[in-house]
Image (cartoon, rainbow, N blue to C red; front, side):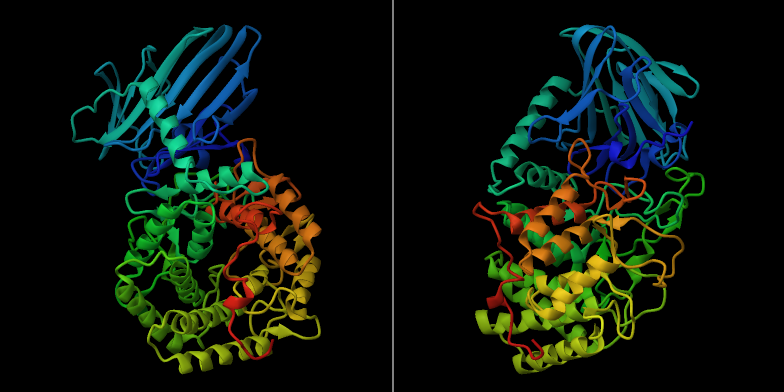
Length: 611
């Protein structure tokens, strides 16, 4: 049967190396072991329950009565109230030890409740039905290189190619289930004490949250976003994945389904801002070091995205045995966009490394970092005049995208700042001249004076929400008439029911079929644009509108369908949560972090013609 829970039905569990999604029905419908980008053992999210899931719920019950995370942690508590009593399921993944575990504890609250545990393990994205046997006080499943062990006092019996356990709890009862993955060639793993793991997991998150310094408005939303970003961090390397999932559609029934379990360079600056200005300096430093390792080597070989450990080859393929979320195929793993030329990433990386330097994150490898920047600048000098595939990774013909050129300007501008402020050596006069040349070209070729808006690309009449970043990167002040005109044009032409599209799918040929939802991060950029233009109250209204989209546990996907009133795209989406943190910080009327933005600071901008 189809699982087909709404995307906003899912809560996130994680151990900072992989993640699970749990629906409001108590079903784990997505879990990859041992890494975010590993093949799944539960893939009902992208097919049917026969593709793997793990549900624990009261007999006859559907959606839960309520659920929430326990305080500022990633421990999920799901409750059902039934005619015979109430029960709670506590779900979590302990921070990784030697092996990954998922723990579920069923707690009786009142009365007596009958429950069923249904476990269908399917390795390799649902393709492999494992061999199962009883061993070491539980179930042992093996298929190819993978094995999982389920330990529980509940008797599990095989039925319909699944394992079913039926049991009851009364007030005060606590029944544990522990699922552990390991390579199939190893002997059975040690048993995990579920209660001890719960206490240690709660202590971990409590200790981590002590670093949080955010004291502005919308604190609950900001803190949940920060926890989500931490959960999307691959702790061995500090790479941050764009989302925990692959192939959740940007339109129901559509084919814009991509694998987001990788690390995008363009997320770097915004993520660093979110972490640093919220007090998480260690995470920011670790992310910076991941970035430097990933881009090491020939600057000509810079990729737009990398694997969790900095892998460069991410070949894209389709899994034809999975039907896709609500029939939205194909299901893809890997990402062919990793081989595209996207000019803007050079500016994003140079901007990130300049932010590091300004905020004192540079280390004793500073000379190596500057050498890396010089190499990137050399490529930028030789290639900034070329067309590219742009911020949105369009699969049509390359174009001269305005955002790409603006980020080229930012790369040269940060190089000039590095020389002026920090005394680093480089051809600063040449960089100044290039900065001025790019700026003049963008204002001449990428601005529609009649409509008073920047366009998506040179010679195009289409507009693009990425133009909202022009003021954020310091290319022009937020109150410049061209920036204000662009904000107005985006509100007029790209806004649906108060939410912002990336661009108009009907008029822009992006090499793909079908449409998509409004983009949550773009809507928050719109709030930032209103704020920088001095339209404070309207900016706050937009932020509140986005925060109202969060599901019951505070999570956001990539997009929102204003007609169907549903979240769309991969979930939880790092870009959306980064934007929540940065927009809330910028609009906050109080707090130590209120209003900080190194890129919109007038002192950060150089004197450039055309302003």
